[in-house]
Length: 250
Length: 141
View: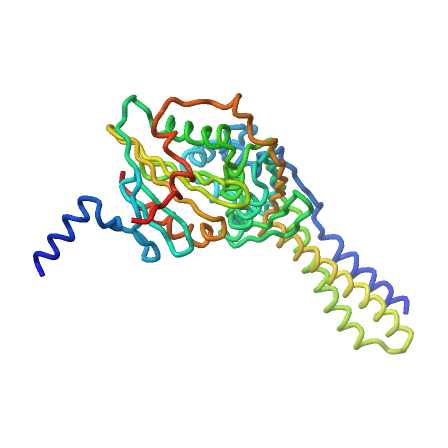
């Protein structure tokens, strides 16, 4: 009995001992990875090895490529506050912009739209949506969760290995008391495996699809005619729906 | 037969029979030109027309596009929806209340300002919009 307790303790400690410390880095709005920070011309203290590469990146790599760096796990979040004259038309265009890149409107809360956009299309979609009105506020943030992701993967692997070992131990138990104790431990580790899997899936989802929150603000009524520009150009005065739609029978 | 063809062409050239412009989507037919170079209409009621103005000043595309947008937004109360860059041109979509949509593409050459307008009831316009945009995108000023 004493021996079993020692074995369980040893197994658990071994599994826990290999956990890497969780590390999460938040970048300032508009800045994503370190390479993007360099791309944007906002220098980080360069490491010796990176200094040459950083220059090359700045001049030759498109932002989309930086966004999908396979070796980094970055969660992108963006926010736009737009002043628009026609909120209904803007909503349709927002929906089109999301669907055009295989994204979707995740939530609508009054004038606020939460979009989920494939990470590789994040910046392009931000730009498309920003053109729908006057930008009152814009936020872009990237959180590098690579270390946290790797840590979770490692913890999951270890928990799964531990579960296998405990299962094997269960077969070797000699009495009911021992079996119950091992089963209790097995149940705890299984729960841990499921919890870690859930966390990893959620993180994968957040990395794969960026979140863009768009808030629309209806602009004031159209400017009064008195304050409006009066252009002395025939071509602009000739434009408009009234003349266009005035089709006569011939 | 040959005489009929010549007569039809002559009439068309004189403005007797409206002619469909190149690249016009099949769902549009030519209608009364009015002050335009040509004007076409879909069964849903969307109208597209082209006009050319001789350039009297040295307006750039940016100037013409800005004037157009401000004129419609500020002087006429249209709501700006979006803008798209074309080859030598800019297309702007406006909403005229809940009832109508209006798209204007402006092109600038050394000698002329060319406008292509499209408009109609909102729902009809939305149905025809993709075909109109594809057509306008291929236009050469």
